[in-house]
Each structure stands twice: as C-alpha cells, then as structure tokens.
Image (cartoon, rainbow, N blue to C red; front, top):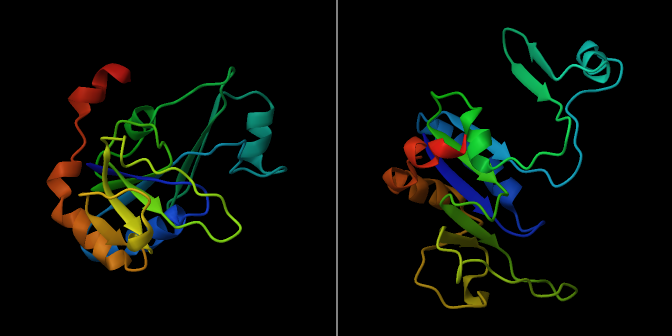
Length: 184
C-alpha cells in the first residue's frame, strides 16, 4: 500500500484535489482509499436509524453492512488521539493507494497544498521549509510561494499532473508496516 498525505490550511483545496485524484488513479487500475482527519464532532449515522439507536443505547461498535458497503462506527469512552498509523491499520490490505487528508503533523510523506492568500486573508505559514515529510507542493501560484524551494512544485489546477507525479514516485510512498508496527 502506498500512502500519500495532503496537508494545508482549510480552504486551500485539499479535498477538491483528492476528489479529483481518486478517479484519475482508478483509471490507472489503482484501488484508492482515503483517511480524513476531522477536527470536530462528526456523525455518519442519523437519528432514528437502527444503527444510530444501537449506538445511542451504548454499543461500543456498530458495523453496518450490505452487499455494496460496510461502515464501522466506534464510540470512544474517553477522548482518543488516534494517529494516522492507527487509521491505516483499520483499512483493507488490498488497497493500492491511501490518500490522507489532514494529519499535517504526521510522519508520512505528504504534499503541501498551498494557495496565496486573497486580499482579505492573512498570510499563512508554509510547512515545507521545516517539515522533512513534505516532498512536493501543489499550488496554483508557484511564483508567490513565500519561501524558495527545490521541491517539486505541481500545478494544483492540473490534477492529472499530480496523479502522474504520484504514480511516478510510487515506490517512495510504499508504507512501511514494520516501521510503524510498534505504534499499533
């Protein structure tokens, strides 16, 4: 499994880029999964549904499955800080690529998604000068990058270029289970 992270501030285009990369990678015969970090309380279940009622009744886990889909909802009794490695361990082993949105502090290789601030926005710091895990930058304004770099700069408006770069660098993104096995 290859794991590529996408880091950047809210509104910079991470979700859109990942959404565009998924079908491009699938067209190349790749099976793609996504791990997304949520900063707030979220729910995939809805009041009134059986699975919601089971969870509200106190079930630690509810697995919902059909012949087309499976979902697992796990309630933590205490707040838990899961690493990206914990979530990767939950995924199906037969996937080719995992695209990780968020987890900007993680020790996985990642692309920094960066947009120049608009006139009404404050400049935001970039990660690539200090984060050794940032291996490329996807931006729509390379001439406005706040710090010069020798890293590959990919065109955020051409996801095909990003997909080809990822596929060309596939060996580099191979996930090392042994390296992270002690965390699980």
